[in-house]
Amino acid sequence: MVRMRTYWMIGAGGFLGSILRYLIRELQIQLPSGIPVCTLAINLSGSFLLALIMTLSAERLKLDADVRLGITTGFVGAFTTFSTLCKETDVLIEAGAAVSAVVYVAVSVLFGLLFACLGASIAKKANLKLREINGETSGKE
Image 1 (spheres, rainbow, N blue to C red):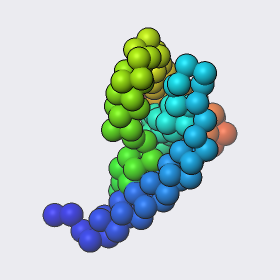
Image 2: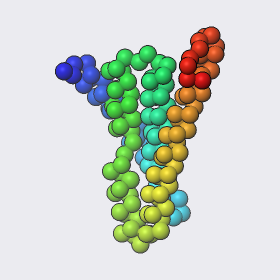
Image 3: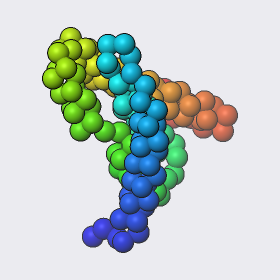
Image 4: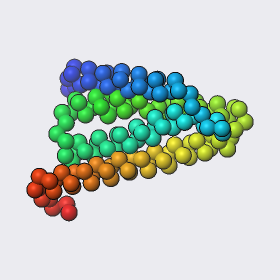
């Protein structure tokens, strides 16, 4: 059974993530092709953060499960936005910028995966470095 604390942590994270997303989107930066840079930056950084945090918490950090859910499901989940990506893609298509729409979706997906891999890779390297510093050994090496 989920405890009430879990809901509060996810809600608090979601509140902060959605507010930050709103503030960044207010910048309204677009490339000449019409591709919205703010949403792209939000989704790419969210991919990176989610992979980084999940990898660190799985391998090294002893995060409380509710705190981890508050950060990942709450904050990162509310910060990133698939629905805005879809709406902005539709706006590009409706404006006759189909090529920009395809580029926007392709860059979002491909670079999102790249940023997630980068976040996980950095977290794994940090975990290894921390093991070295602490004199720990593992059968994983």
